[in-house]
Amino acid sequence: MSIESDHRGSDSPYVERVWRGRTSGVETMTSIATSTWELVFWEDRGVIHAAVRGPETRASIAEITGDSESLGITFAHGTSMSHLPLARLVDSEIESPHVTGTTFILRGEEWEIPHIDNAEQFVDKLVRAGVLVRDPLVAEVVWGGIAMVGSRSLQRRVAAATGLTQGAIRQIERARQAAVLLGEGTAPIDVVHRLGYYDQSHLAKALKRFIGRTATQLRRRNDADDPMSLLYKTENPERS
Image 1 (cartoon, rainbow, N blue to C red):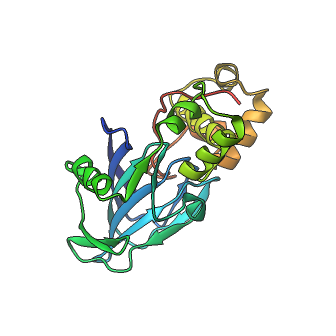
Image 2: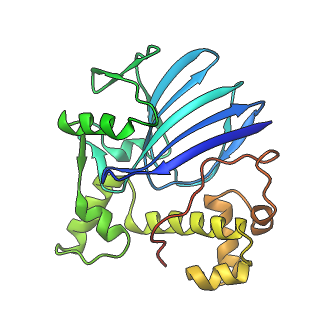
């Protein structure tokens, strides 16, 4: 029983990460919270699917039906779709209405399904077609940058481009960073001080809500017995 994954960063300002995965003999996995949205393609029992999957505000259990292969493009904060408000996608997803072995439908148009090596070229096509737009201010202020606009205007821009508040994004990303540190063997009390939690109880509540694991489980993590969705280091975890 296993989940194999391969992922990489991207030099595109629109993309945070590109990943692919394969499951074998897995019935369920923990889908951890994430503040970003993604475009996902997967094969299930010989049928290809495509979906836009929104941010997830808490950990949940995802069912897996049989062996599956998947590819995902995770978009950077500030990247959004002009035709689909991200607020509609929070804790949800929308599947493409028609998918073949090589194409799928997005915004009523047919597109070729990308692969891990040409994901950025595919994203460039979406940008040129006006499917994807980007608010560079959002990417900056999410991690504490100084905005030259009023706070209410900024809050509206963050919500429009991410579907979440700035505070929610920071809480999710901080919990993900805590999980990474614990998985690397960092002591919980050191994680508390390093990431600005009030105390270990505060950390424990965040882990339960956003990761679905305790600190002890993360330090003893065994992906073969207890699979989780993709977890990786973030660039700028902020205190909140």
